[in-house]
Image (cartoon, rainbow, N blue to C red; front, side):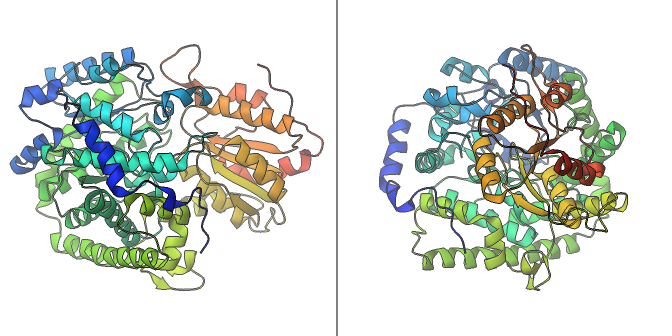
Length: 593
């Protein structure tokens, strides 16, 4: 087993000191109160969720992705007023903070601003819950970031009581900033801070599909991973954690089964934050996206009707895969989900709940085995399994692939992916295989292994790796050699990998609205380091321009830099072949400022 340690975990502060740091903040702060809390006379969103669970009420969650506070606040008002005026409702808004918020203020000048919100003052934090009586939720770049503790403090002071995103500790990086020991300690302090308000109903949020969870091939091992996160957050830090999922779950019945499994490992009956929408079935066909919205939201509503867990259903606008949705599209998605919630009881009585129970029990039983194997092995490696920070650090440096190979519960088969046949494969593994197979049918150069002997570096600019995985599978199928750098790949990592592998083609997937900036940085880095390689980019080739709130397509600008961004997966083999034929005569041009 290989370890990519970024610091010595034994150098972390001891648990007593970390808890003392959190206690000092609690002694000098007061939990804020939002308009939502005032309206419903509750001390936290968790308290409200328990009321909903007891009375059969299904909540709704909408994610907001505009990059200015002014447009976000206006969006809050318009969405709330439009829905309430028609007899509909919205319970919670997910607010997207920019990734610069994930680092201390003094380091932010080192990071390119993305498409999220940047708060400059405590007053701006507090304002988020004072626009309309809809409860805010902070997920991105909060707990799990280098600024975990301070961000959690500011959010609690603003009355935000469900805070994430634990999973991002493992998968979100801040290029150019290497303070992993401090980041780990900050996260533990934040967990302990949340734990000191757990009786009020604070909830630590972890979206399994946003972190290492998305990299597991076996759902049983994913359940085991969720148990590991519970052990760290609850048993060791005193907090209460909720697991979100859904982004990568396209099978509607599996969503119900997995939600039931999450309920069975939830020993404190902590209410869930939300079940996110199935975004892997979303593409540029909005009519098809509408069908996917109905499919997953109906399943989630049925699951909440039968097994109320407090998770809100998330209406994903049909435009999600193409751009940041507008106010009107968010409203439309909410109205669509209203009818799914209304009709859910009619479907529920005809579902084979005995089968749901049996399937969820298999996942939980096998998940416990994975958890115990992993924890026992870490103990044997002399990791202090009573220290949350040591566990976080070691799990991050081992990574899911090695965990699944070494401790997975699937049957051992030499020819299987990762050497094991999954007890129950994840939807993403099945979907990647199906999409790859469908593309390969119509591609030339695959059967005759046209890429044999060609080395390709792949990676993504952010945590979204779905497109990268499909392209990786196609390259391997066509005989190519792949060097996968994972997610949030910096330009420095690309340079190191090119020197090490001698690859002449780099394929990067991007989703988070920094396509042009990233392409410029890469091409300029190639020029400065005299690197003669071809860059191919795919995904959402967009970025905010001229102070706009919404990202716009920047394909032409990126292509003008000498980057292939044609974005047609079915032509990938040809793109790579063209790149290898031309790299020796094409040099990256200097990038205009």
